[in-house]
Amino acid sequence: MRRQKKPCPITEAGIRYVDYKDDRLLARFITDYGKILPSRLSGVDARHQRQLSKAVKKARYLALLPYVKGQTG
Amino acid sequence: MAKLKMRRTPTRRYEAVYIFDSALEDTVIAEKLEKLQTLLSLAEPAELDHWGRRALAYKIGRHENGYYIVSRFVVEPKVLPEFERALKLDDGVVRYLLSLLEHDLGAPKLSEEEMEARRLRADDDDDDDEE
Image: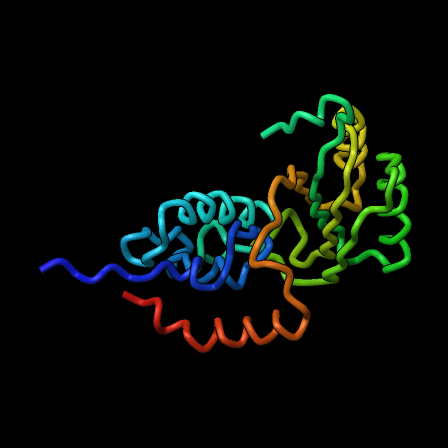
């Protein structure tokens, strides 16, 4: 009854190390509120998920991604 | 991590992202950047990537936009404290991030066209990622 494992979308894109400057890529792995999407939902493999979490945090600091989305002021 | 040969040549590769005040003239930004980079006394000129003005994801102080510049360089770590001090003191720099560049980031070198194609594709299959 186990679901088929999804292929890792980051591996599939041919990415070795996730780039914190690629906000278009990172935006695909955050929720509507700006939280990092869990890998069980996105199918990202563990190695890339670790990189992703660091990358998102750097991107937030650089105002490439919001800390909290959908908030005014 | 640290390679053996680093003992002899204690330089490391860094990547810095600067966010300049977007209200500044381009020439002023170029000047400031030049001045900051000279503090590093680089053996080889830094690899620069001007993103230009773009909207910040959130307001930083009174700033809503910033002028982004990405710079990559090889430098001895000991010059960095002074460099960072100058960055912090410069009012024209809204924010900066200095990080070690230990691995090439992203997918293997893509040309501009490939980048664009990938971005378009990424937009197209956005729906695939939803649970």
